[in-house]
Amino acid sequence: MKDLKHLYYFENLLTEANNELVKQAKAEGKLAVGYTCYHMPEVLLNLDNCFSVRLRAPRTGSMEIATYYMSNATCEYARALLERAIEGGYKFLDAMAGVDVCECMNRSMENMELLGTADPDKKGFFWCNLDSPCSDNEDCVMHLREQVSRKVLKPLHDNYGVDISEDAMRKAVEEHNEICRLITEIGNFRKLDNPTITGYEFHILTLASYTCPKYLIVDKLRETLEELKTREPDHKKNFRAKVVVVGSEIDDPELISLIEDSGALVVADRFCYGSFPGRQEIILNDEEDVLTQICRNYLQTTLCVRHSAQHKVQKRLDFAAELVKDYHADGIIYEQIKFCTYWSYERALASHIMHNEYNIPTLSIDRPYMSRTSGQLRTRVQAFVESIEIKKIKAKKAAEVK
Image 1: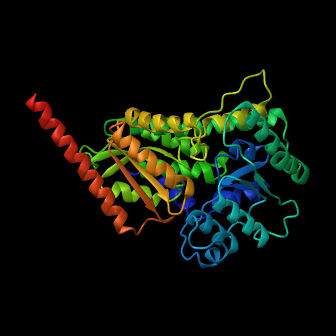
Image 2: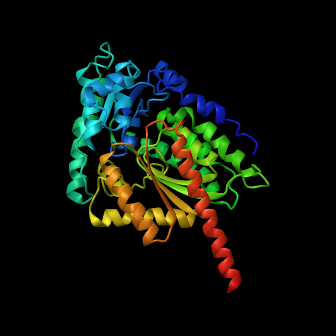
Image 3: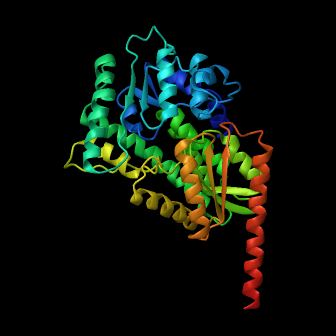
């Protein structure tokens, strides 16, 4: 296929956390608020003159210093962020909005604060760590509302004069929803028999929507959507199987590229930094206060594995199966970053259930934070694609016999 007009532009933005659009927004007087997790309501970090930056550590190399503080048996994503913070990679931030969701990220955030990785000249800078509930009932909604109001909105207003009114929240939701609509419409082209966008390209666009000021990329996302409406796919399919990728944090486009170079086309994603969940519109009513509605939305739409109630476990299984159906996939790849406690359990359980009860071909992998040089991982994906092909051949022969 012909290269997308803005693909290289978006790829370049992802090479640094403090990219050119972040620098432009900062030069315009905007406030950069860092965060790492879906359980921190992203839309509330984009109020008034603020913009959110979901943290990554592109081109991570050695993590020796972070390992000294956290040990080598902890999540590489958490260590990579700490290493980058110690290097000074996040000094552009005006606030850091963390969430108490796992022990590794808690230790990473604590060390960032204790080691003084923020810019000392930013007098209004603050750290916060939300106590995010593990359920979605109304008591949990009100608890999250109180946490967000006290730990995020109040310091934004007190330290920087940010408008935290209902009108400001509604405006932020409208801007958030426009990005969501664009990402969703772009993603719908993945449902085609011969998709006109690759999983790698889609992941690049989605990552940019998390890590760049949204008002500075929305025009290029609109142009990309229009471009896809007339983009011609390759006449010969460049893939041998379609897969859904489900799992933990993926902010490394090279992982998706590795999977696609191995013969699979990633047609849907259900992972942190992906489009499910995270790029669905927030629907508001006029009867209830906006903050409560936003908090309820994030608790009810999360597919995080730390929500271990049986109905939540079943919801995640059914959701993954629906993605396979809706996007006409041939199988699922369940992945986790090494030493991720939550996903090590979910991956083992869900991959077994998907294969044995849902009858969906499944590959289960754990991986390093940066996967670009993993020959073993490439071999496993290639073998998985071949097994799907063999299954198709056997099914075709069985149908001919009948």
